Image (cartoon, helix red, strand yellow):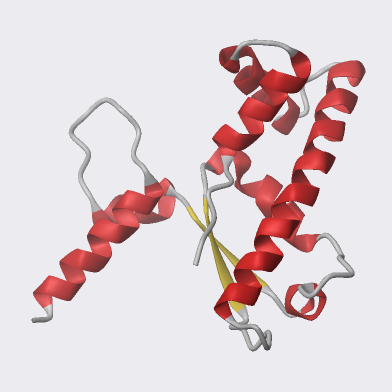
Length: 148
């Protein structure tokens, strides 16, 4: 189970809240993540991220409840995101919540999946980046068909 809440969601919200273009918002996020923003921009970005985390936590809880209403869940969770934002989602997971995810979060092992871990599984001859989700899906199907 997954929900579409990633870097683009964050960039769109920064652009909307800051009334700037998507490109500037992406740059702002990148600078924030590398701790290279001035205090006022950092505080504004932090406030936006706090609001986004609340929304993300709702999606996360709904997803967990959809997987298992009794909350009998695995001890491992896989995060598929760009390297530059994966730490943000790991931080989101680490926040203590008083919702149905509390006990799950306490014993959670987070595994980050990025293009670096997947690079041995594919060959990219294009000059563009790759989508981690598509690589995982293609690898799964490749293994599935090889085993038949």
